[in-house]
Length: 567
Image 1 (cartoon, rainbow, N blue to C red):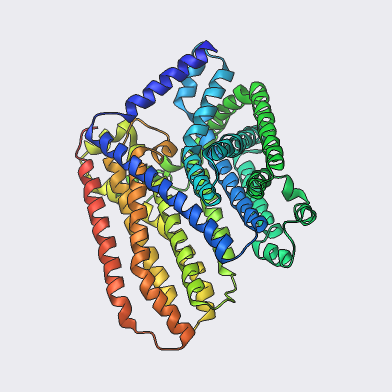
Image 2 (cartoon, helix red, strand yellow):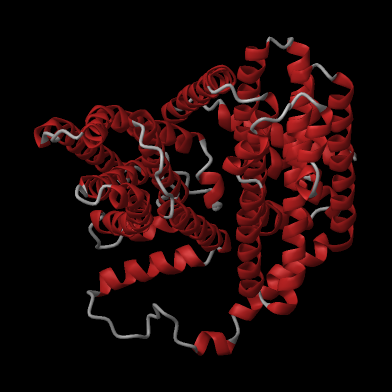
């Protein structure tokens, strides 16, 4: 284990050196990251405290039902961490240049696996850990828990919960590699995507929150008999149920049952980690070799002779420069499996969300609820566009690598490759944004078909939000470019990306504050049957447009100027 700790020591020193670099760009990144994480932490704390107080005091919801809602949120967290770890693990465990380097040294493959597994978990779950910890503080502040109680829940419940999700992700990934060696990578990946969709849909059909509220009306939810009856079945044996039960029994003052459920979760996590180590000992090195088999299959003489979708041997009506740039972008994106896998998963999730929201029946005609519901869907659409732009647009300039000099030194206008990236990124973000905008506005338009104003507003917003977020991520992605990093997921999680994410969120919050007053007046006019004055939307729409256009122009100028630097 001396080798293991030796490598770990220098990985830590490398991280500290890169984090506390004295250059101006690094200082801006560091300050931005501190502001971002600090802001997120405060918001998570206040939101958890406010939601807990509102639900338990204003809606009079019972502790049991509230903690079932927490269980549903923990399930979403588990699936999110799990999918994120699958994608990041593929790049970290199999495609990382560091893995190939360590295999040439006197380091056992199990030490390499353990190093990269921990690296992957810490890298992909740190943000989730921070948010969950601050949400736990807000939740605990409402109940007045002591600090050592919250610390114990964090260390012995929520941390094992996140670690269990990462362990399951690595097991799924190695199983996927094993099956892909026989069935083909695309078939196995398609089956995995269908499985995830089926699991999520089935979970929320079985544990429908509306059905739960109806089922528990009139029950004495302080009686253990009712709790056991409602907790029976498969869902009560899932990790999210164990974690939420710990919080529920602490809130009831039943420490013995809380410790029992925490011990159950901790033991399962330890057992799952042991299984991960056993499977890795048997299969990790072989599965690493499988990746070379995939690469060899795609580099055969027969595959090279086949005409591809954007093959350079096909005739094109475009100019030679534009044709080369477009095809370069295509091959550069699809040569990295983590890129198109992640894009495919996000596309599936967007489709599931759009279809689910499009079928919502708005029965409760209350102005406040309708307005808040619309703003939640509106904010989700913006956050989706923000996530897509950060993940795929921010790394675009850095992914050119050190060979970017060949374009910058060629007789080629530097604006051309930059705006080719912008046009492709804009289409990539705009299409899902329009899909979400149309489907999320459909229930409101269906209820009030005589006034399709919300649909026009949704399309207008989708266009300008997509344009602005793509401009921000491409421009600042050029300013914070790191041409030595080949992993797009790491680039999208860097300090520069974090600062860009902060600016994007501030922009989205500003938009919500601009549109909230005219939206409230619009819903008031619908429910109180008085005409809506169209003049009330002129000033907000103009402000919306000017803010978006100004940010877009600023970011594009910064991005273009960044191409003038030596790298």
